[in-house]
Length: 511
Length: 115
Image (cartoon, rainbow over all chains, first blue to last red):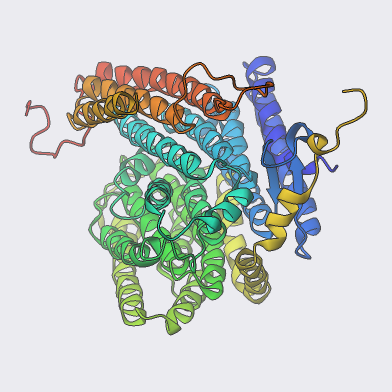
C-alpha cells in the first residue's frame, strides 16, 4: 500500500511539535523548517496529482482496517486538487508572514500554522464523516490560536466571537452526525451513499433532518448568508497572513458541500428532494448581493476585503447550488481564483496598513512604496470584482454560462451582474481614497520604511498565479470539468472504498 | 427510558440555547457547555438505548450495545472540553483587556454605556 496519501497530514503534524519543542527560541530555524515543510507539501501534492490525473482513486486504510470499520483517506481528482491549492497558498502566505515579521510578533506562529495545514489537508482527504468533524476541530483550534496571534483588545474580542460561533457550529455538526448514525448506522461516506439510497420513501424524517443539519454546518463554514455573521469581524481583525490563510477555510465548507451533496445526497435523490436543491441557490444569491453591498459601504479596507470574501464565496455557492456538472466545474475554477485573489487582497491591505495609522477609508498621507502597492491593489481589485483581463472575469463567465439552462437564470444573471457593478464602484472608491486622495493631504517628508521586498514577492507571486490561472484557463477548466464528471459518477469511488479488503476480511489460520 | 433521555436532551438544549442568546461571555460559555452535554447524550442515544447489553459478540446473546457511539462520544467530550478551556481563556483575556464582556459588537454610540 502506498503511504504517500497520508503524508500531507503527517508531515505538518510532525513538524509542528518539532518547531515547538526543539526550535522554540530560534525564529530562523522555525522559519526554515516551516518553509521547507510547505515546499515538501507542494511536492507531495504534485506527486499525488500525477497519480490521480487519469481519474484513478487512491485509498489509504489507516491501520489496514477495511472500510466501513476503519477510517479511510481517499484521494480523487478533487481532494488532491484542493490539497495542492492549500499547499501553494500556504507557501506565499508563509513568505509574507516572514517578510513582514508577523510571525515574530507572538509565540508559536509557525507551529500553529503547521497544525492548521494539518487540519485543512485532513479535511480534504478523509473519507469518513466523523473524521471530517475531527479534522474540522483540528483546523479550528489552530485557527483560534492564529486568530489572536500578536494579541490586542480588538483582536481578542473578535476572537471570542469567532470561537463561540464555531463552537456552536461544531455542536450542530455533532447533532447532524448523531442523526445520520441513528438513521443509517454508518459514518463512512461511501457506505453512507449506498445506505441512504436504500431508505424507503415513507421513512425519510430522520435523514431529511440530518441532511439539513449537515448543510447548515457546512454553510457556517462557507459563510453563506444568513450564517455569515462571524466572518467580517474575525477576518478583519485577524493578522493579515492569517486572514489570507483563512481564505482557504471557507473553501473547506464549499468542498464539504460538493463532496457530501454529490455523493451521499445527490441532487436526484428523492428522499431529500426540495431541501438544499431549492434553498441553497437563493441563499447563495443573497450572499453575493450582501457581500458586494458590504464592499461598497465598508468604512475600513480590511472589512471591505472581508465582505468581498463573502461575495466571492456566494459566487462559488451559486455555481455549486445548480448541482450540475457544468456548475460544479465552474465553481471549482472559481474556488481557485477566489482563494488566491482574497489572500492577495488581505496581504495588500496589510501592505497599506504598514504605512498608515489605520485602515480607515479616509485620505491620509501617502504610504511608503505607494506606487507598487497601488498597482498590486489595482490588480487584486480587478481580479475580485471580476473585470477582464483576470481570471475573475472568466470565472464569472463560466458561472453565468452554467446557469444558462437553469430555471432561475434571470435571478442568477441579474444578481451576479448587478453586484459586480456595485463591487467595482466599491473597489474604485476605496482605491481612489487610499492612493489618489492621499496625494492631496498635507504630509511631512518623514515616512515609515517601505515593506520588505519578500512581502512584495509573496503578493506578486499570488497575483502571478492569478495571471497564470487566466492564461491556462482552458487547461484548468477542462481539468475541473473532469473533476465534476468524476463527482457525478461516484460508483468507482464507492467501489474502491468498500471493496478493497483490509486485514479484517482475510482471517489467518490459528486465530 | 426513551422519554427520560429525550426530555433530558431537550431541556439541556433549550437551556443551552437560552443562555447562548444572553450575549455576555459567562452565560454564553455556560450555554455552550450545556449544548455540548446535550449533544453528548444525543450521540450516545444514536446507537439505541440498551441496558446491560454486551458490546462484543458472545454466545447466546441476542441484544448488543453499539460500541461506535461510545467511541464517538468520547472523542466529542475530549474535543468540547478542550474547546471550552480555550474559549474561557480567550474571553477572559478579552474581558481583562477591554473591561467589557459583551459577545456582540457594540455600536459606536453605545460603547462604554451598559445596556
